Image (cartoon, rainbow, N blue to C red):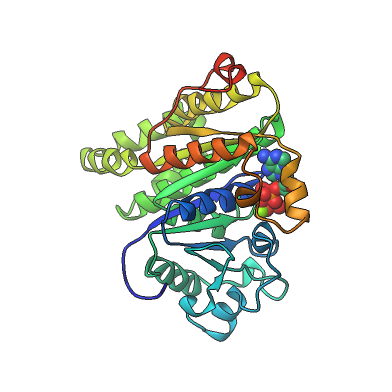
Length: 316
Ligand SMILES: Nc1ncnc2c1ncn2[C@@H]1O[C@H](COP(=O)(O)OP(=O)(O)OP(=O)(O)O)[C@@H](O)[C@H]1O
Ligand SMILES: [Mg+2]
């Protein structure tokens, strides 16, 4: 079912800080897509902390990415059933495989095989932090999604993560013009060039040549980050997503879409512990509606306007 060449849409979920709810949100969005009849494969790419199967209430599958890396088994052959119709699961590698041991060639092979999986959507759950493998996998995606909670430390980590992703993207882009050194030089000597922030750096890059400028504008017009705010506890929390969106534009010159928020609901943990997928079994939670809306917004690419007042009225 999941194995021949066919184009699919890849969504990757990341975020700077650990424990914000990346895996919960990825598994919930995946379940929502599956409930809508989309065929998908969800990949646990959290090398070292692979636990995505727990969100589906299944035991650790026999097959995992270790077999892909260590035994050269094709990705399509390590897909297991997630327990939810229409959804296959590729479990992350634990223990023997740390991300440092993945070579560039292995990574390219992984990316090629991810792209050729037969499904409507591939969802990738990434680990916390800005490891180079995380950044590269994130950049592979057609839709780049980040999850944060409304806490200063998480937001700071997320901002650093977005900056690292953007910088890496820029490096790839300028590398294709033979201008990688120019970027390093500009960033290192930013004071001398009058570069105060990322937006200034981008202006500096654009000034380097008209060709680069045009190609850069085109490339970056498709570079969009979707922000999801998780574990919202009060109405004012939801404004954090709007602020983050504005900061991305002002300081990074980057388009971000605020895809929505999910409330904190203590039932989430209870269902994980009971090994019952939350999206299937806790239908009365407000989080269900919120995940449905988030999924719609990401599918359509449209942003919604959120206000604290509408939150209090239960709608936005
Ligand atoms: N909306 C929510 N309401 C209540 N609890 C939540 C919510 N989202 C996540 N949690 C709780 O937070 C814990 C961490 O969530 P999760 O494992 O999804 O985070 P993560 O970002 O994937 O972490 P890691 O960085 O370790 O991979 C879960 O055990 C879950 O119980
Ligand atoms: Mg996780």
